[in-house]
Image (cartoon, rainbow, N blue to C red; front, top):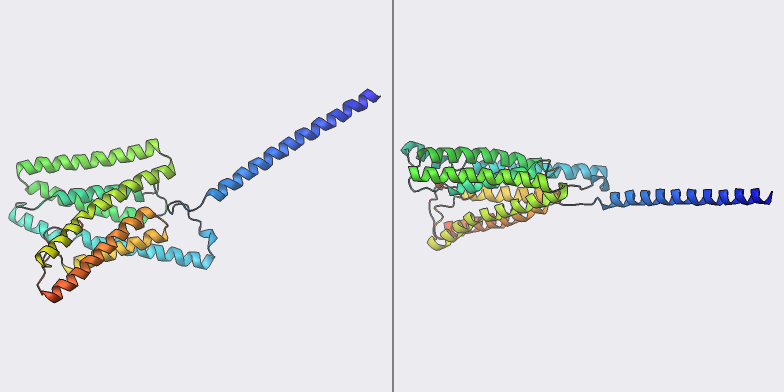
Length: 286
């Protein structure tokens, strides 16, 4: 009888140990799930939790960010159509004359990279970046096609080669980002690439600023183009801040400062030296 009682007691002890282990594992699993939920904090604006804000404030926040993005799209459209006078002249004269097609090649690459960055597969929540750059890519492709059509033979070969290189680089970027990176790493990889391409584009306005200071003339820096540039950069800077996305607000913050410098130079030299500015033959931001 004593042996039976001892066996029953040992069985109860083993059962208690087993149950305690199960509870410990369940608690550990629950704790890990809780930690994973807590780890989901703001990462480049992709996983921003609007639930942390009051419902009314969250709605206002969303409306403000969308308004900034839509405004940026509208101002960017003004920049995209600004080279039209240049290409009207090229078509009319059936020659590219001394114009350079490189700004449009750089702009096409920039639009394609930023278009990919704005796609949901890379950055969920900033689709307005994809829309503006898809429109920009179409415009730049049209400009490059017209340029190649009326360029001399050597320039045709050069521009065609650059166009192929741009699309090859874009396809490679898409493949590498999808094949070798997870969602967060993909956003970082493409985001850094887009920032680099945007900052490289700032070489054009810097050259224009240098030219204005050197010649003391605003002939090739018209007011409305500078104003559109400033407003577009400011809009996407605000959009990036509201989306908690440094890959948007850092380069566009730089663009906002450069646009403001252009407006200040325009005001200074137009009031000091006067002048009747014309539209530029090449859009510095195209």
